[in-house]
Image 1 (cartoon, rainbow, N blue to C red):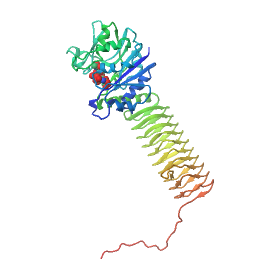
Image 2 (tube, rainbow, N blue to C red):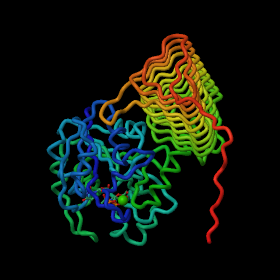
Image 3 (cartoon, rainbow, N blue to C red):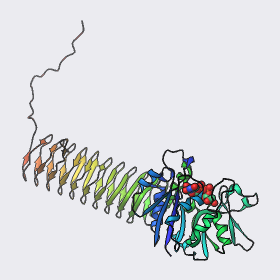
Image 4 (cartoon, rainbow, N blue to C red):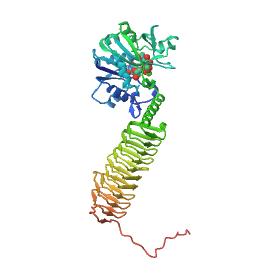
Length: 457
Ligand code: UD1
Ligand code: CA
């Protein structure tokens, strides 16, 4: 059966104390709702409908993808009322799967297992058993263990409050009679809300069997209501990511000081020192060494690359095998480093190809440049690639040697094995093998007397 997924995301998130809608707060660099949407999307034969309310415009703008249907719940009258708003998106011959926009770590495997139990006569409810069930809806069962319904904390008797099996909120329902059942939900309860949880007893009265399923880990169904809970889930997520990386053959100096806000794939025997952050898509080869405090986004990094402390890589960047970077280097978008190239401290590169074995070891800015193999760029060399309006490119051919503190005023080409004298401002091309020097001649003044301090009368 097809699955129509309803994601409830209308709540305010008062306890976040934030001007931003709760579901836009990020976990591992991605909005909470983004995690739920991505997981929902990964389910086969699914369609997605998001119920927004608080900050609806901001939330919808953040997710412009055309496969999302949006309905607005202008007043938050309860979870049952929220699902009612989604009725136009729900096909009668499909399964309706209800998810929460603030429960980011629900897994596709759990949802698929849940859905597999649903048929015309069976509804599936995701429950967990908690040591401390306070605040949650409790699962009511008869003596034979059949689910009778759910009672909310605020409506529960003292005896019911002792039940430790709770409602996660996630349920998968055969949609044939959804509209009918939702219409029967009232709001005469402690909170004056239309509880989606009432659907369970209603469906059961209609002869539906309630099947329960539990997730592999409790964190999968934990919601975010405060920044503390957000942080707890963030740390859980990062710890899991670190464990998986280590299991795949990567050494982490400290699993508690590792953050991946995207996807990191690595070969074996790579070592990552403390406080590194990975963003977007990062692929590391084998035997890569990453020093402390590096921030690396959207990069492909080859075998044996060494990235020293405090380097920042803002991709898309590609680094071939054996290259060495840092400490304190900044590689910006469009940097392509060849094998065994070296980028040293306080060097910034942007939109530049730097060939095999070339070195830019100290204090340089290289932008819009094509640098061949075995080029040596001296300390303090700058490509002057911008005239205030347009960008121009610099070409340094194989074996070129650029003396320290050179300004390369683009567009300009320095030929194969050509040399540029230190301190030059190069405005014209230097041909293959030639020396280009462009600086004022040194003048020494003999008998020069240093000024002496004039004494005040
Ligand atoms: C709900 C369940 C409870 C369950 C708990 C799990 C009901 C009545 N209760 O309680 O059994 O144990 O979740 O966390 O369903 N939302 C809307 N519109 C509304 C109300 C809520 O979109 O009108 C959204 C919220 O943004 C949130 C989710 O639904 O993402 C859950 O709402 P919340 O108010 O947190 O429900 P609980 O009282 O925690
Ligand atoms: Ca909640």
